[in-house]
Image (cartoon, rainbow, N blue to C red; front, side, top):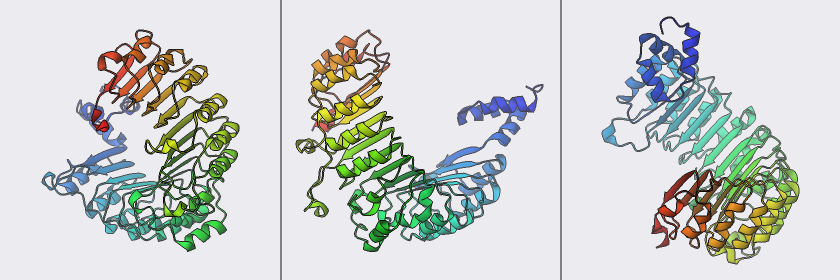
Length: 467
């Protein structure tokens, strides 16, 4: 190793991806140790950091070119030592001049004071906060004022972020490309209008409302009016995920669904009020759509909807089939077993979508309308490679035995399906038709029944969900 040029050793080390392997290699000789110290750009620390501030100082001195730092205290208890506090962020700001990506998870001792120190990290472009309960909107504002190159911001369960001045400020910078706000109880969909012209550059938006606080800010009339009056440019939006949101006609996030002409992936999970016309408008605008995931709520007794019962029907699937010729991934889920009794997606609607689009991945959860006839129709699904069936109780062994006739299927996942047994998998035994088979919590399928049904199999049996 001593005769190898530095550049070659550097290249060898760059090919070692796992941190544990890097640590082992650095113990081989002093030269590799020193080169690894210079090359190391990412670090993940947490409960083992004790005493926290002293240990972090030592690590920052050892790795002077750190660009990505993750600090997580998941599972922390007081007996594991004191957590990193605001002084730790001072250490990062002073010793990591190349810091571009910072992730803080379960850091309960860090406050706004610590975030203010990070404002001096001019290269910081990504900040992800997961359950940092002492941080408020003031701390985030002080950080975004200093870090004007911020393109990624994720806030997850930041319960004390109540003010939204930071959102308005970052909107004026027009740098944000990836925004994720999940279960921050004081932040409602009406607040997102404050992004203003930043909507133009936003590529990914994840907005998840705590289901228990769904209605807390929905009646903010001023914010609703701003959505209606302001033109929302979403031409750059590629991925959109909305969970537990209120989608009301002409209000809030409903205003943007039909304006994302370059959208490639959308996930709507338990969003109350989504109508056929919303999906039809989305399909007509977003011809580049490649993936759609719909988890439909069944509670139609909500006060907001009393005089206007809403549901999605085959009209939505028809619009997707006619306008989204690049659609490859479809996931349809109902929230419980009672909802399918209402008029919603039918088996014919689902099959029509599969026939008209190059669907490679199909996942159905609680879709009681899908049965053995549907499985037979999939024998002509020439693009289908992955099929996932969850709680599809109308599928029997007769339908499952047809899997061997699916032209390109290589991955099959079965979960909580009551109507299938070992007999349904028997025709697959020894055929090498499937690359991977996963069976979870199907009471009539045994571990012995899955053996040999695919090149690789996974089996798990936990029937507590039935009781």
